[in-house]
Structures are given as C-alpha cells and as structure tokens.
Amino acid sequence: MELIKELPALGRDLGPGLILIGLTSLAAILVGCLFEEWETLPWMATATVSLCGIGLLLRFLPKTSKVPRTSTSIAATALVWVIVGLCGSLPFLFTGMSFLDAAFESMSAWTGTGFSVVADIESWPKTLLFWRSFMQWVGGLGIVAFTLTVATRSGLITRGMYTSESGGQAFMPSVIATAFQMWKIYAVLTVAAVLAILLTGVGLWDAVNLALCGIATGGMSIYAAGISHFQNFALEMVLIPIMIAGAVPFRLYYLTYAKRSIREFFRDRVLRAMILAFLFVSAVLILDLIFANGLSVEQAFREGLFMAGTAISSTGFQNTDFAGWGMAPMLFLGIFMLMGGAQGSTSGGIKIDRIKIMGETLVWWFKRAVLSPKAVVLMRHNGKAVKESQAETLVSKSLLLILCYLLLLAGTLIILLHDPYFASNAAGTIFDVLSCVGNNGASAGMISALMPDYAKVLLFIVMWAARLEIIPVMILFWGLIRGFGWESVTRGHK
Image (tube, rainbow, N blue to C red; front, side, top):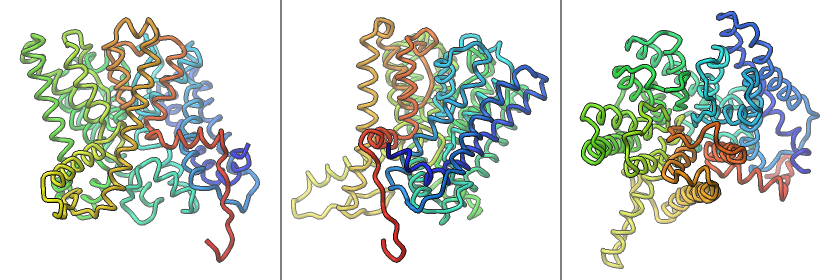
C-alpha cells in the first residue's frame, strides 16, 4: 500500500504533533491527582502512552528524500483525527462503556460536535469529565494546529495540512507563527470566559468546564440535563457571547491586538452577517414559540435567544428539551445549525462565509439578467469588486463544499430513516442529523445510547467528515483505494 511507503515522509510532521497532543492529556492526569482519583490514572495514561507512542514511532521512521503530493498531506489531516479519536476513547473504558460507545463519545468531543451516548454522566469521575471537556477545547481550534506548532519545516505537507484545517486563512506570513498566535488568543479567550461565568454565581469547577466547551463551540455538559441543570438565566445570557466569540474568525482577534483597535470587528462583513443571522433566528423563534406553540413570553425569550446563539455558533448547549416546541421551529433552527459559524474559527458547519458568497452570487446573477446584455457587471465580495474569472472560482469552490454537505446530510438521512428506531420520530431524526452534519450537538433525543450500533459507526464518520469539511476525508478514502502517488524532488528543478 502506497500510504505505508509514504509514512516516513509524513512522520516528520505527524509524529511531533501526536506527541504534543498526547502530552496535553497530562492535564487530565493532574486533575485526577488533585481530586485523588487514583484509580482513574492508569486508564487516563492509556491515552498519553498510545498517542505519544504512535507519535514517536512516526517521528523516528527512516528518513526519505521523497515528498508526498499535496493530496497525501491533506489526507494525513483526516488520519490524525481518526488516531486521536480512537486513542482519546481509551480512558472512557474505565466507566464500563463499550469501545464503540467510547469511540463515538471521543470523536464527538474532538470534533466539537457535542453529542453524548452517556446516560449517567454525573457518576463519572472528575478526571474523565475534565478529559471530555478538554478534548473539546483542543479539538475546537483544530488538532492540526498542534502539528503546525511543532513542525520543523514549512514545506508542502505543512501547507497542505493548514489549508485543509483552517481554510487557508493565515493572518501571519509564517504558518507556524500563525499557529502560536491562534493558541495565545484561544487561551486568553478561555480565561476571560471562566471569569465571566464565575460572575454568574457558578462554581469554579463548573465554570472551567463550561468555558472549555463554550469557547470551543463544543457544547458537551458534565450534567445530563445540560445547561438546564443550573437554572441560571444570567449564566445563559453570558454563554451566548462566549459561544459567538468562539465562532468569530480568529484573524479578527489578532488584527485587533496588532492594531490596538476594535475597528476590524465593526468592518468585518462576515461578523455582521453572523450577528444579523443571530438576531433574525432569535426573533423568529421567539415569535413562533409564543404565538404558534403557546409558550410564555419569558420562556420563549429565554429558550429562543439561547438556542439561536447555540445554532449560529455551532456550539450545541441546550437550555430546553424541545418539549414545548413544534416541528416548524425545530427544523428552522436545524437549518441554521447546519450553517455553523465563520471560517477560521472553532465552529463547524458549512460556514457563514460560504452562505454569504452564494448570496452575493445571486445578486450578481440577478443584475446580469435584468441589465442590458452589453453592461459589465462585476461581482462584489466583502465590498470589493471581483473579476469574473475569480468570481467563478470563488463560487464554484463554495458551491462544491455546500453540495458535499447536502449530499452527506441526504445520504445519512436516507440510511437512518430506513431503520424503525429513527423512522418512529422522523422530525427528531432530521433535527439531530442536521445538528450532526453541522457539528452542533443540540439533540432532540434520537442520537443516544439507545440507537443501533451501525448508526454510531455511521455518525462517527459523519462527525469526522463534517469537521474536516469533507474533502480531506474523501481524498483519504480515494488515496487508500487508488493510491496517492509521488512527486520527485530534484534540486534546481520544480
């Protein structure tokens, strides 16, 4: 198999990244020591040992002068997520979970999706609860950023990895410097989130876990009832800006810091679109819940506003079980959960950027149709004119990814709705699959420990593919079937 032959070249980048990811699991071991949960430590160490062991193995493979093609480097991104998803599940076996359930829980955490198949989460030791939250935090910004941070060269592999993970939105000349700045910003936002949550009266342990999951737009909770467990209106209102902060493009934070001005936030059209979408979804949900579903004004405002924030940010926190909701508001919310946040943020989904591009395209096409055939109509993107050839490229890339998401959504629904378990609640299934493809995690209850095992495998793949925006996973499967190929590297020649 060609991928095996290419491992020595890939190992120089993948190995250090996996080692660093493994070392981060020591944070959960420290939590276990703090709470004196000694019996969990050997299980927690399985993640550390397996990730570091695989990383060392890859790092010290024999050197090769051959360099994999771009397709191989992008496929390696997808492979990293599978490795960490499986290795990260090992500590969960301490609770008596099956390996399949543990792997599902782990991939849900790493991808920031937020679904859970744990029925008695409150009985878990704090070590594993923290590991579950911490996986969301690390996975929120992207595991590949770790690889970028420790990479020793900025060649083809590194560039391919960064492009597939973050959409190519580097805000510094060096990819490695970009990764460092991303993590600095991420840490500051997380500390600010912890402090803000503490002000609502929540204890430190809960505040840390909520901040890790909120700023990562992950959405898992350490309580079975989710955010409803706290019955804290102030907490819910504080979590909304925290969730949206994680869905904002990280380049805006860097530009604000570098220029010592918040002007970039007011200028950014994607952020404006996100805020407008949040206000629109909030208004529609509140009005629908009041007039069509009979909820009180207070309850409709509380649930509608919070769930709009969790949808637009791709977080998945819930302050409702949808008991008083009808099918219409649920499906309306589900559509926006599929949309997700902005590119270059911690959120999943199609991304508001691409939806915005398609809106700009519709305006462009409409103007071309109604004006004189001789008129020259330029497409405008982010307020700037774009040449027709560039516009077609921009539109085609966005449309391709949107179609990939829709095909993934349709294919998953077709498979699941053939099963009596899912067909018994078609509306709930559609909502949960929309949430899954959008890496959101808000659930109507269909994705749970009760669903068939094949569905857990299928949704494991869906969460993984959606988080990496599908293309890297397609390239990986295509390469495994057809081979990746090699590019010869000769000095003095391209």
